[in-house]
Length: 145
Image (cartoon, rainbow, N blue to C red; front, side):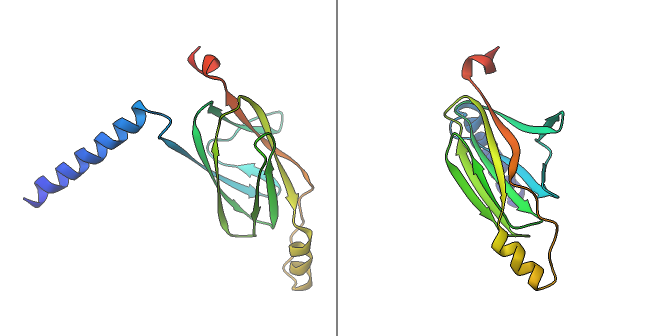
C-alpha cells in the first residue's frame, strides 16, 4: 500500500511538471551564480572574449540565485533591479524577461563593508565597479527560429 501511494505521488508530481512545461509562463528557471574574485561563474554562464552572458527567452521567469566572496551591489540595467549581496550570504533576484535585448548586470563594491572588514583584518581585494555579465533575452521570434 505504501508503495502504491509513493508511485501515485510521483506520478502526480510528474503531471505538474508536464503542465509547467506546457505553459512556460508558469515555470521558473533557477540559475545558480557566484561572484568570485570580481567575476561571475556558474553552469549557465557562457563567455566569449572575457564577457559572460546568460541566455533566456522573452516571457521566461528566471530566478538568479547568488553567492559572493565580497560585499557587492548588483544592478540589472533595463529592468531597474538592484540587489545587495553581503559577503558569504545567499540572495535571489527573480526576473520576468518581458523585454528582449542584452541587459548588463553591473557590480559595485560596497565600500563601507569592505573598509569595515579591513579594520577587522578580514579584507579581500575589492573588485572594481564594472559590468559583470549580460542577461541576453531572446525575442519569441528569435527563439522559434
